[in-house]
Length: 138
Image: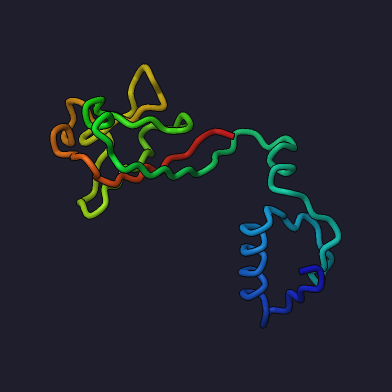
C-alpha cells in the first residue's frame, strides 16, 4: 500500500484496498504524500485512544434463543446501547420488528433487550435466530 497511486483512474480501487487493509490489519493510513504514499500509520486502537470523544461504534450480536431466553423474555447484550430508540432487532425469516412496539431496552438493566408485555411476547420460540444491531459509546 505504501506505493499506492491515487490517480483518478485508480481512485476507486485504491479506496477499496484501503478499506480491505483496515478490515484485515486494523491499520489506518493517517498521513500520505500527494501520491498517496504512506509515511505514517497507526492502528485503529491508537487513533480511537488518542482523544476521540463522543464517538459511537456499531455493534451487531446474534442469538439463537434458548429455553432460558424464552422464559426470561430477554437477551443480554455485551454492551449498553448508546441510544435505545436506534436498536434494531431482526428475527430470521420474520417481518420487521419495531422498538417500543415489539421489543424495548430494559429500563433497569440497560444491556437487556426484552419483549415482555410487548407484541413479540408469546411469538418468539425456541431456536429463533435474532440479530440485534445497535451503537455504543466509545
